[in-house]
Image: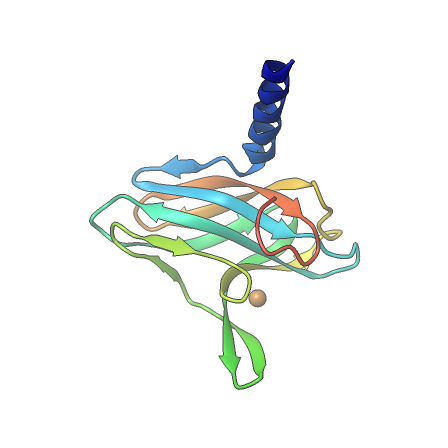
Length: 151
Ligand SMILES: [Cu+2]
């Protein structure tokens, strides 16, 4: 009986990770890709993920594209006293042999002109084009509104 319970919990945890499995191209891998749920009429949303670069050369994001929004662009959250605002970044750099982490309150991919909002449990593809590694199709899982990480 004990054995069966243990096996059951392993299956559950594997299913939970399925939506955020790493995808890679060349020396880059993208993992833990997620977005926050929005209300159905929302026009903007945010996507977060972690990029690992195994190469001795830096890389950078040149373009972002998805079917759920008209535009996707890199944004940075800037804190000025008590006020935080978002500014567009021209490109996102992935350091040589390093990690670029997109997370709430920091760097993120802004989705503009969403086509019907983002629902919890929904998944969609974000195509991320890098200067060196080429295009990676990243599966994104939508978590709760206000979530601080992938579930
Ligand atoms: Cu933003």
